[in-house]
Image 1: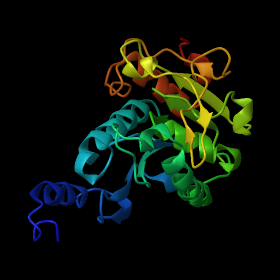
Image 2: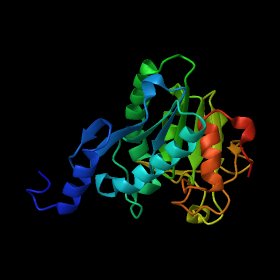
Image 3: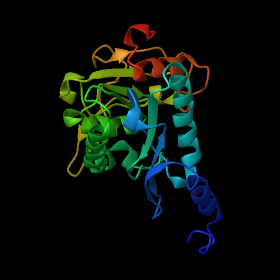
Image 4: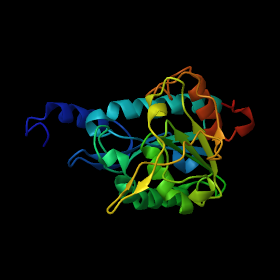
Length: 252
């Protein structure tokens, strides 16, 4: 259909996805997809990646690379690891008013909750370790979903904030981690929040601040798109968290 309508870029992206292991696919509009690397039905550890702004089927190759990098790093230590790239919501544009509000995150939260519950239902044992890794605006989605998510760890990467002032305000017993690389431009986003008539603008407390209360880990000099760079300090720590090796995580 994309080719018929002259959208060769989308047609190429769709053909590439057709070679992948997909749980879900929706080619309408910006598109949505859920890709699996590894076998979650036999995994001891599962990581679910939630992307940030400007992620769509047209830019999916970038999102796939992050998932593949984590899968390779974690699988090297424990082959019974699976990674899931969850593009299950309509992400906001980086340059837009939507990206400054929780609206898209609030819309996405029920879908993420439902997916994690379904995932928990197919894991080999109730103790299978599930980690939610949330990048940029994806951290807002995870925060809005947090109170009822049956996961073991939530990781906030390059987060502009979560619309919660503290980890306690997320109302979750789950371990919450946060990291920001020294070259990440999101450090310059003002950490304010204002409740307006139709929406909440801004996301409040900096997730890597002492006041927020997350477990801050080292991401070295990662830029906003560099947290999953092969060989990086950040990726090594993300693999350790995914594998439950929390004592091995280096702190920021």
